[in-house]
Figure (cartoon, rainbow, N blue to C red):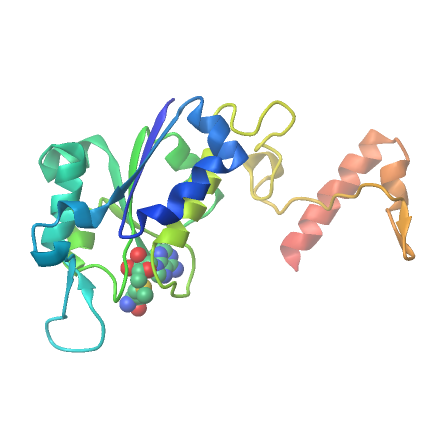
Length: 226
Ligand SMILES: C[S@@+](CC[C@H](N)C(=O)[O-])C[C@H]1O[C@@H](n2cnc3c(N)ncnc32)[C@H](O)[C@@H]1O
């Protein structure tokens, strides 16, 4: 299924390299449509401001709800309610649903996804409550902004689109995939056979595919337990 993936950010230039990444480039020639939009463009405030000081006091600025809605409605030329029905609108937020393999696969099948990148102290809570359809976190730590998170999501999701990885690579036998029952992937080795006394495990040279498969499974399970 084609995927329309849009990113709303205050730093659209940062995303230029993404389209040059091999697998994203491949996907762009196929089922991926990637849009990057500057939220400031749609702000009618002086100097195209998008943030303001927090009610209740405190340090830092907060990304406003009105300028965020203006950006969403401006990009799609539709009222927010209609956009929310047509696409998953995902606000990047450290407190959100943890991004993982299953989430990435889900988004690759979602059809239409918009990623909202926060900055400063984050979004006005009303963005999370009424604009976004969900929130996504890369993990329990705070990034300076949602851009790196949106890049991670784009990279991981794009790998699941047809043709993204070319003919000789597959996203199916990777760490955490259902094909590996959600386990981390087994270790890989290539030439040289021996380097500074570090040897490739004998079993991988045995040619015994059954034993190799069993060893790989055991290694995945061991890494999962560590
Ligand atoms: C400096 S952070 C705001 C942190 C917020 N005040 C807090 O304590 O959770 C600015 C923006 O970066 C993004 N961000 C920060 N950490 C993130 C994470 N772990 N996952 C996804 N996005 C994150 C969000 O878009 C957030 O609005």
